[in-house]
Length: 208
Ligand SMILES: C[S@@+](CC[C@H](N)C(=O)[O-])C[C@H]1O[C@@H](n2cnc3c(N)ncnc32)[C@H](O)[C@@H]1O
Image (cartoon, rainbow, N blue to C red; front, top):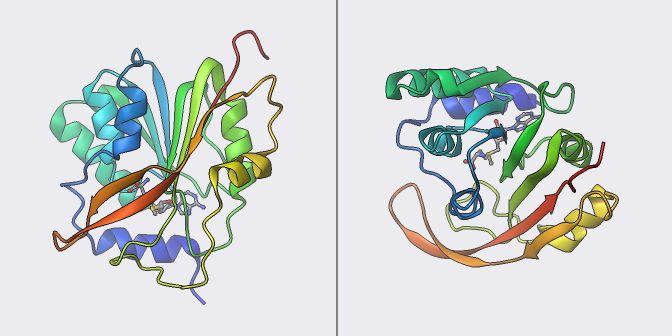
């Protein structure tokens, strides 16, 4: 069986990424915030990274796919945001970028391969600056065009995700845990209503 890196490399080598759009829940969450330092976990085609950089954020964009992070770096350079976008290739199960962040976003950080996701997201919570937000958005339903059409799939609810993270609620209180619906557009322009599972925790001011 191929490994995760090869799988995602092939995905990004065969996909046109220049039209990547921002994820709606990232835009909704970040719009009221003052620009600061952001970390985009599993940045993929970089729609969120570019959106944040355009608004003055300094973004570290991380993905297991070297092709993905190279494309994001190139796109940032072409758009004139090279000074606000740092790209790093990591298998986040093995390594995590240095730094502290005001916003850490994990948008659909899901993969068909084993991933120590809870460990990665706990590390992310610890990398927040006081007052910083960790935004986790997962699929809560299967879109008709998704690669995963397993009828028995269980998407962890936001409450289950929070329980798995097992963060001290005094230091990382939950600001949002819900499952909004949205109209999504597939690769061929088709539309369908999908569910997102959303969890936001905030690192309280003054914690170490
Ligand atoms: C479902 S895609 C989501 C991409 C992007 N965040 C978006 O919203 O379009 C999952 C992303 O996680 C990345 N990924 C999967 N496993 C990873 C790992 N172990 N370490 C780092 N990135 C990983 C993939 O390469 C892919 O870009």
